[in-house]
Length: 82
Image 1 (spheres, rainbow, N blue to C red):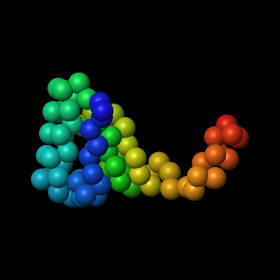
Image 2: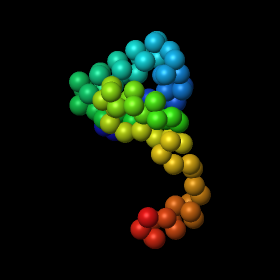
Image 3: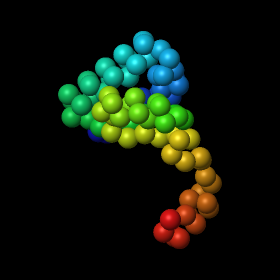
Image 4: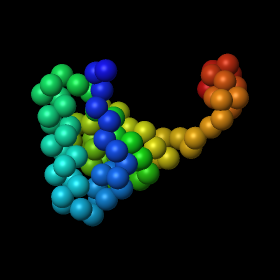
């Protein structure tokens, strides 16, 4: 696998915790040095996304992007081309 995922536990406090910001930025830097792409999980706010963008995070997942859907909802979404 070529991706590194950062757990939502670290993302949830990224706005208020210097320690979590340091951990997240270090993981992103190390992953990139190893040729890996990074996905941050549990992104819920635009400020979290902004911080991750500043750190060079490649992808984000979480409620900010979309709420979870059922398989049938996902299928309908994909077949309708939306």
